[in-house]
Length: 490
Image (cartoon, rainbow, N blue to C red; front, top):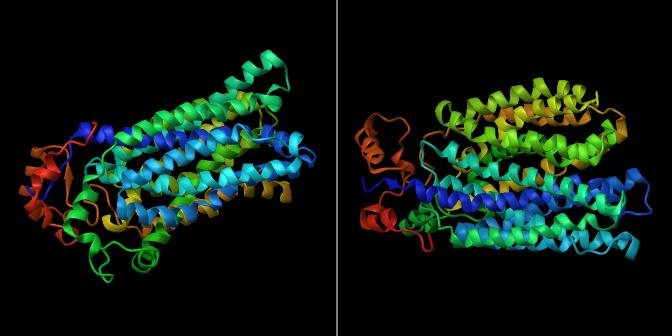
């Protein structure tokens, strides 16, 4: 019993709620920038041809993702060394500050194309902070969740993501309605675009307050106390830097990167690029694009805990394989229906594109961190996630628009998404199933003493238990500290 970590549901809820607000803020910014992309083109690229200006604006979105690997390489290993909570607080503060400052930047009408320089710099700051944010958040919720319900609890992290994006889109829509009613059709270009970014300031203060209250994960505390993090460099369960992580876990890194590429190429096409696509290729207004996408994102967010629970029952791999198949089957019909231009057709098409996104996304926050040991989990997640998302996720809007401009084929975004869906499906076949199993480098985690007793009693016949990957010395010495201590301020 001393070798089983009992984490109360109340602590799990507190920890996850404090993590979700960070993802909400991250995607709130993506929602603002995505839905204001055409407006931002007029604000920051005045004087350039429209198509060139749109690519330059979308490059501002892409440049933040090009910074994410650097943020991951720096912040990930730091998170393994000093703790998850401290790094998550830092990334939240940095992200909220950068988003707010975008709202006070000078425009091209004031200083010419030099206006792009501070915009890109702030997007780079956002990218650096996000390099530690999502990797840290997935690591945190995976380590705080019980083994049997990790898929369910971890899926709430991305509920915050898509609710945040919907909130960003809604903020843009409401701001457009109000400012144009007051000042006319040019209000958003004149000043209205600033308002959604400035709203990030009070939201960021609330999110930072939540981050101050979350405790460190029990799994990290066990790994630190056991001495697992200071084992020799030859030990794959020890804490490693970037080089050591790549040497010991290059296969897992490649599998994770393939899955992340599929998740984010479809996810960012649905969110950050879809407003631009609907305006430029389908011909609907900015307001209609926002109004059509928001309810779809809410449906997507609501479905994630259900799919996360399903992955706890049938496994992460089956859900991922269904996601791959649905990507190949649904993308082309969805984009074909979208071309009709009617509101009902746009809603139906967006719902079809949402199916593979939800199936990829829901198990990912549980499945990806579980590929790596506790001592190096933050760093490994930061490497795998940020390399993939910077190369294949955040660049989706830019490459999709460029492919359409080069070929004249409005189905190119669908083919782009399908390619990564197929590659990830092959990678999943080589993935180790992690559902209902303890994390590598951690002891089993349950939600009640009764569940712990049941686990101990049936351990000899339980194929999910592998004691070779567990630090079994520490809990014999200080079980009360790790099992009963309540976090400060909670």
